[in-house]
Image 1 (cartoon, rainbow, N blue to C red):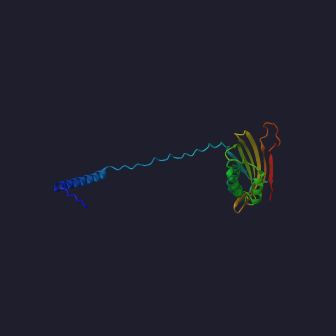
Image 2: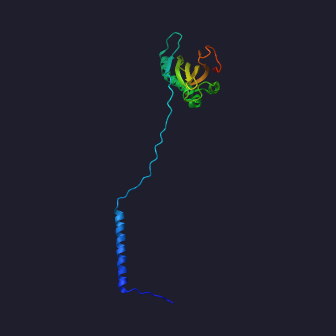
Image 3: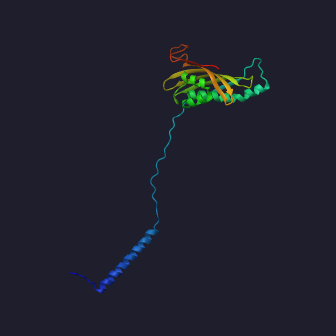
Length: 223
């Protein structure tokens, strides 16, 4: 059985008017919302990461002396000029090698590979000289005397180096003495031989000045 409902005409008119009013209200709300000021909410920024670096241990200033030994005390002008040109490169090499030994030990392998001839490099690594750990050693003396052979254009030199170092955390003091024989080739200076004498600082607890337990002496072959 079909059922149909017919609304009176007056009721239909009122429903139509109500629908129209509702439509205008909706449109007005859209315009009001559109005209409201927009605000973008940013997520809270992460706190910046602060890198905290440990305070570096104090290191003694380098004292480097260069000279040109001569039998008669006088070099020919070309040889004297050659010696003067090589003072700074030799000083830089000595600082680089011994800073890597006692201060920046993470650079030691690269420094030896660059500044030592292959045979001397292998022997120097076996010597066990240096501090071995970065950031635990402070130096109280860093001194070097470099003699440059002037004859022949300053192509050979000998460096005598003395280092006094201590590890404050352990209370241990070390005396290091080295002699480096150097030769200058087409690529610059290299260590071709060495002698190393390293051990506890003389005059410490046992009062003796001779070699002690842990004392190291090493030599690299001279060419």
